[in-house]
Amino acid sequence: MAVRQASRHLRPEYHVELDISPFTALQVVDAGDVTVTPYSIDTALGQITDHARDVAHGGRRGLAIGGDRTIALPMLRTAVAEHGPVALVHFDAHLDTWDTYFHAPTTHGTVFRRAFEEALLIEDHSIHVGIRGPVYDRAGFDADACPASSRFRG
Image (spheres, rainbow, N blue to C red):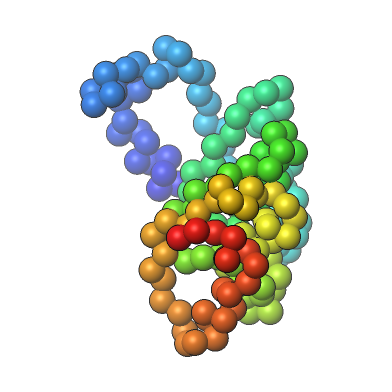
């Protein structure tokens, strides 16, 4: 909701700094929020994947803005199904490459480990940017010391 509210302040016809009128060349639509169940992460990920596939149908491109970091996994799955493995520039304070988070295998803290395990990302073309997040203790570094985090350059 915050992203949508902030977007209302934008002037859609002309971008001063870039000296362009982007919507004269591009057709853009707000495809809305994805309705997901709050009771099952696996079901919710499937619902996000289905919505992303609907948006991307027919050669259209999807862009997700906002939401929990967990949405990255179904968005990556959708992009890879259409285009093959992708390069990722991950802007965040955290690596999100833990094996589990609170004993759950798929959460906001594990999405990029799952993405590498599913061969969604091009290893030598993906990078973390802005990693600075606090960890609870030394075990936090050990949890991120996995093949997925070592494949990222940061």
